[in-house]
Length: 240
Ligand SMILES: C[S@@+](CC[C@H](N)C(=O)[O-])C[C@H]1O[C@@H](n2cnc3c(N)ncnc32)[C@H](O)[C@@H]1O
Image (cartoon, helix red, strand yellow):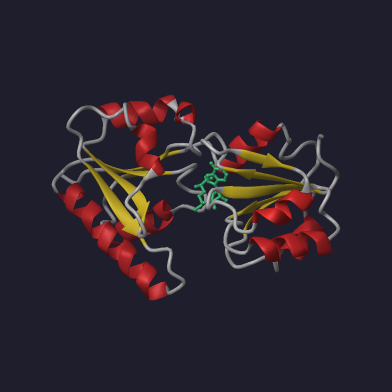
């Protein structure tokens, strides 16, 4: 018998935003937990969020995922990590892969799910959704994400701000994820589009060091923000 794979969203950081379903599955269904950590250090925020909800003795392995720009390096890390998960499933144990936010929104779990499905097509895979970072950020800034007939676009800024113009033409509201790497370039793009008075930056939402900033001039002083940073842009104007 093969074990199941659970992709569990643990929310954006505040441990109280973990769902009851996630806790229930972790307590009752799972025999082995995997959590992603950076390849630079072994800290896993996802793991720290579920601490206190795991039955004593549940094995937890932290898997280092490379954030390298080199596709081969990243692919190598996914393959190795995936093999560790498959090994557990082959022992008939249910494995959980913890994801910050939601497992199907810009998450490493997507690659894990595809690889497990390719290697174990008969295995059951179950996703427990999580509250996304941008939902929590909108809540913490009291900025609606979409209302009435509005359209919203969620964009990764990992490769810079070049898609911002196109997206801003189509959408009333934008969420810019992964803003940390190319922040100055993203800010120039925002200014170029005349949206500098329309954006709300949220960093480390629900965590120590949380920042909510609408003053564009102050954003320019940040330099490189924390990895856990995003921007909500509202073409029709911010609430405050
Ligand atoms: C790899 S994506 C993970 C997204 C996650 N799966 C979700 O559902 O929100 C990482 C990006 O999510 C955003 N993010 C995640 N947690 C956040 C937080 N607590 N505060 C602000 N942004 C956050 C940042 O833009 C970060 O660069």
